[in-house]
Length: 201
Image 1: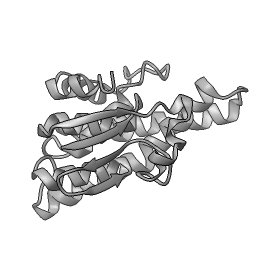
Image 2 (image 1 turned 30 degrees about the vertical axis):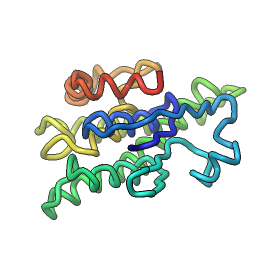
Image 3 (image 1 turned 90 degrees about the vertical axis):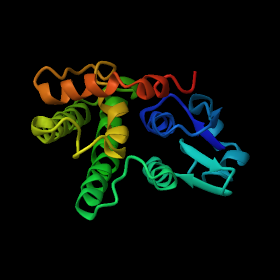
C-alpha cells in the first residue's frame, strides 16, 4: 500500500496519474500548501524540503520525495512505463529530466508572476512566457512524428501532461502547436489520467 501526500498541483498530479496507470492501491493524504501544511513537523519528517508530493511505500518501508524520483520508483517497482532497453530507457530519462529541469520550473515561474505575484513585473512575465512558449515548441517538434513523447507512453508523458494540460489556466493557447495539442487530447482521454487528475478530491 502506498501513502500519497499531495495537493492539486501539476507535480502532485504526476504521481496520482502514475498510481492509477500502474494500478497500485494508495491512500491519499491531502497536504494543503495554501495553509502551510507542508511545514508541519510530521510532514517534514517525510519530505525535508517541505514540498509535495511524497510517498511512503508501506510494503517496502521506503519513503520517496521529488516527483521525478517517485515516478522512477513506481516504474521500477511495477516494471511499467519505463523501458529497460538501453536506448529507450535513456530517451525516457532525458525527457523526464527535461520536464523536471525546464518545463516545471519555467511554467511555474510564468504562472507565479502572471497570476499570483503581489505586483506585476512585465520583464518577469515576458521572460517566462517566452520560455514557456519555446518549450511548447520543443515538445511540439518532438511530437510531430510520434504519438507520445518517446516511443511508447511512459513516465515522460505522465510527468509532462499535468503541466501542459494547464495551458488554459495559464492564459495560453496551443493553437500554434498542433502536435502538442493533439497529444494533450490523446493523453487526457486515458481513463487512468482522468481519474488521477481528480486527486486529491
